[in-house]
Each structure stands twice: as structure tokens, then as C-alpha cells.
View 1 (cartoon, chains in turn purple, brown):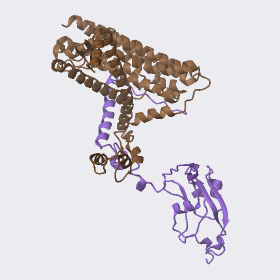
View 2 (view 1 turned 180 degrees about the vertical axis):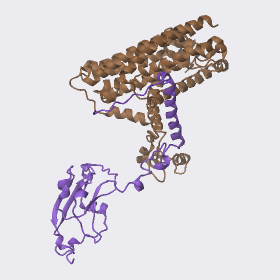
View 3 (view 1 turned 60 degrees about the vertical axis):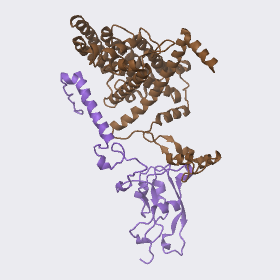
View 4 (view 1 turned 30 degrees about the vertical axis):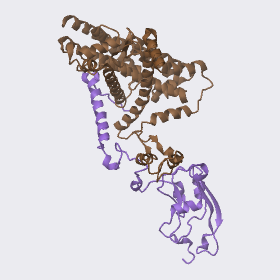
Length: 188
Length: 420
């Protein structure tokens, strides 16, 4: 049998007259109303909201320090702790990106730099934040651990051109990550 | 000046002119109050919905005093530029007043400005008339929804009478002897608006919504008419001003605590009156197309109902029509069952013997308070009850309410005949 017959509950006459049930329902909603006006809503403490009900008044009070570790915000580029650009412009993120938000223009690494074996680094790296869907595929596919989703969620450009983030901006937002990737170190 | 004054007195002494001028004044007052209450009830709806759901609701929009910033700097002296232009000294009273009022902030007066901004937004939205609609009826429909509730308000008394040296003024736009009938007849016209909206949209869901609205409104009109008959039997009049006057003297229909209201008959009549009140209030909910009876715009199975194809101000007219119907419905319930403008406990007569104008002002305020309370009740019920199923709505009307109403009439007749 592919379906489960659900038995409807039998209502007593009092339930079917409906007036008593109506009053019960009204008292529940009224309780919520009074409690939220008094600032004693249930789970207000858990949410640490300062507003009416269990709510945080948003721009003044923020959720930032309670964002979970797995929160997916805007993608950013990171440098290694040696200051090296981790991105080797393999363009895997550009290919995997389902929203086609990423544009990478590959460039060459200066042979005089400390890691000449790396050979490539992005000349340009642009992420269109109007297209990005924060899926985190770029982070997952990156073989160099160069692109990470940050916890930034307030992305409010005032026009379309501002929504496109270039390389400098992405590195500034990403900062440096610990955990040395030594494979490009020519002395190792 | 004196010549003008005597001319005014001459005009007011003419009964026709007196009647005309006072009626126009009362009409303006009624319209202003209803439109203000439409706006206010939108705000109440959204705030109360928020509170019931443990959130604040729209509490941000306020007086945008920060728009004054171009006229002066933000930090030192608000409106410095403007004050300098008018030559006010920077340490004078006006400048200090501006500083004290902090005329550069936004004052969020509980978000009361929100409905006004919503209205402005709807005005500025793009108006789309689909190419496949019947243009004439499509444009006619929103007018037919918004108009009737405003016209129906004409018979609702908002205060008692005032006698001036020129004549008596009854605080009710049209003191008709068929008050409730007028309200039912005129507000029943709004069903044409809903039907035409559904029909002329030439699209499936609006059509279904229009059909539902027609069936529901027509059915509940029957029950609504029958449910007030016990009340009319008790008062023996159809004039709303007289009904409220009787309630002011002898206790409200549901609260007979003073005057002749303490008689055994009135207390025995509380049973049919209570049933009548429950039925009438429910029918008003159905007539105003409010949850739990908003079958005509039930978005879970009809997208948006009869106004799916409407946009911009035409949609806003439907929206305002619904709220105007709610305000008029509340006014009817308040007038018939909760004493209308009467302050209660014999305070009306006492105030009137002191000063008639004072009594009228107090009664008007009391009426508006009662109206607000009932609008709150409307909103409260909306955010408590889930929507009924369509067949349940029709069953409730035809199989429960109409029978109950007839039984109620008989019960009232028996009580009126046997209990003295």
C-alpha cells in the first residue's frame, strides 16, 4: 500500500460549535501579542533581540557574532601566510560557477618572485555579486585553497558596476589564511 | 465684516440652506474619518499581525525630518541656512527650539507613516492593463468596490443631536428611517465590483475568485439580514439614530446595566442578542471578504483571486475597498450591538445637560474608540483563524446560520410576548 490512511480526529459537539475553540485560539494569539509588547516573548533570550517580540532591530543590532561556522557569504580571494597569491588562475572556479559570476584573466608570475614555480597568477579576477548565488562550489573546486566564502552578507551596491568586485577588493576582503601550501616552494 | 456675519446668519436661518450646509459639513467629516480609518486599519493590521507573530511589524517609517538637512548642517545647528535666511539670531529662541527638537533626525512615530508611503508607492507603480481584458468593465470594477462602503456610511450616527439657534443638527449624514436596510442594500452593491473584476479580467483564476465572491456575498447577505431582525424587533425601529438613542438611555444591546436595561425582559433577551451578535459579526467578516472567509482572494488556490490582473492604483482601490468595508462593518456592529456613540451608564444625558457640544465631542470620541476596538478584533481574528474550506463556508451559511437566525427570531418573539 503506497499511502497511509490518516484517521480524522472525531470532534465533540463542543468542538463543532466552534465558539469555545475560537475563544481558545484568540486567547493564544492575545497572549503572544501581550508578551511581545511587554518584551517577554518566548525565545527572546535565545535570539538576544532588543526589539518587540523576539526580533533584532537589524541595522542597530546584528547577528554577525552568532553566524555559524558554515555560513556562506560573499566569496573572497586569500593570500597565503607568506603573502603569496594562492590563486594560480587555473580557472576551475570560473568553469564550475553555475551562475557564471567569476571571470578570470590568467597572467604570469614574475620569475624573480619567491615562488617562480607557480608560473601563473590571475591578471584580473572579477566576481559579479549580482550573479553570485553563494553556492560555495568555487571554494570546493579550488585545488589551491585560494577562494573562500566569507561571512559577509551585506552586499549593497548602489549601481551595477559597483557590484563587480575586482582582484584588489577580493584580496582585501579575504586577507591571509594560515596553513602553508608548500608545493610551490622551490627549495622544498 | 458685520455685514458678512449677518449675511451668514441669514443664510443659516433659511432651513434649506441650513440643512444643506450642515449636511455637507457632516459628509466631509464622515469621509475624512472613514478614509483616515482605512489608512489606520491597514497600519493596525500590520502592527497587530507583527505583535501576534512575535515581531515588531512596520515601525520605521516616520516623519522624515532628515530631509531638512539641505537647509542646515546636521551637527551644530539644525536649519542653520534657513534661520540665517530669515535673519534669526543663532542663539535666539527659535534656534534653540530647533536644537531642542533635533530637527535633523527621523521621528519614527510607531511607523504610522507606513500606509501613506505604501499608498504613494502604489500611485507611482506601473499601471498594466492586459490586452485581453474588457476595458470598460475592468476599469469600472475597482470603482464599484470602493464606492459602496463610503456611501453606506451615510446613515451611521456618530454622535447625538445638537440644537443650535438655527435648528437641530442630528450627527448623522442621512437620518433615514431604513438605516440597516440602506447599509445592507448599498454595501451589497460591491458584489458587482468583485464579479465584474473577475469576469472582465478574462483569466481563469480571477474568474473563479469572482464567482466565489458572488456566491459568498449573496449567501451571507441573507444570513446577515435575518440575524439583525431580533434586534429590530426589540427596538421596534429601523432608524439607527433612534436605536443608538434607546441604547444610550436603557443600556447597550449586549450590556443592559442601566435605565430600563435592568428589566427582566432585557436580560432574557440577552440570549437571542448574543446569538444575533455572533452571527452578525461573522456575516460582517464574510461580507468584508476577510479571513477566515476570504475565499474570493484565497491565494493558496486562486493566485490572487479577482484582483490578480490588477496593478497600481486599481489594485489599491480593491485593497482600500476591503478595508473600507471592514470599517463600515465594524461601525454597524458597534452601532447595533455595542451602543454606537453612547458613553454608557447615563453619562450621555448628564453631559448633554451640561453642554450639548461637549456631549457630542465626547460621544464622537467614544464612537471612534469603539470602532478602533472592533477593528482590532477584526485583525485579531484574522491572525488567529485559518481560512475555511469553500464548502464549509457555504455550509455554515445555508445549513447553520439561516436556520439559527429563524429560530432566533422565534425565540425573541416568544420572549417579547411572555416575559414582561
